[in-house]
Length: 157
Image 1 (cartoon, rainbow, N blue to C red):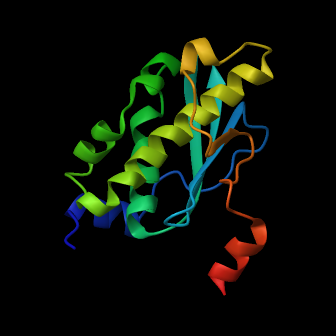
Image 2: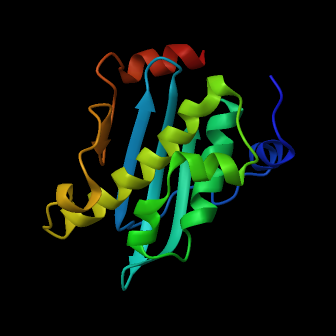
Image 3: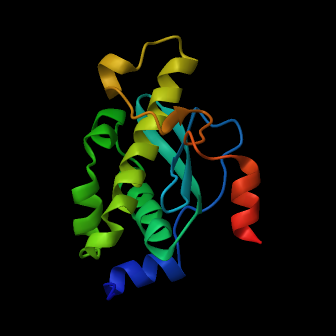
């Protein structure tokens, strides 16, 4: 499996890693088949994403797509961030192997989950704005139906 130089760079030197204290929105998504988990934090001022950070438990492609997605939405409006597709993330990374496309989908979903959380915290129904999120995406907290904290810990051992 060959990765582009950009994927390798974002994996080796990920941008915007960490947490944002008092984040305006937090989204966490996961894929129980591959075990990747992404958590994205956003800070919003006047509808602009002024800061974004992520924590990802997963493969190199999951880390690279998280990193690139944060770069693509930082400084952008919420509307622009919601338009970011997994395809745009893949193109910005000069492509991904077919078996790793799901990582870019997770990055897109993590952004949508964080924005949904942002709206929910303001008493606004996010569904008309963000759309319906898949069952594996829970705003604020997530675990896919067949996932537990214990199984993640065991996988890590």
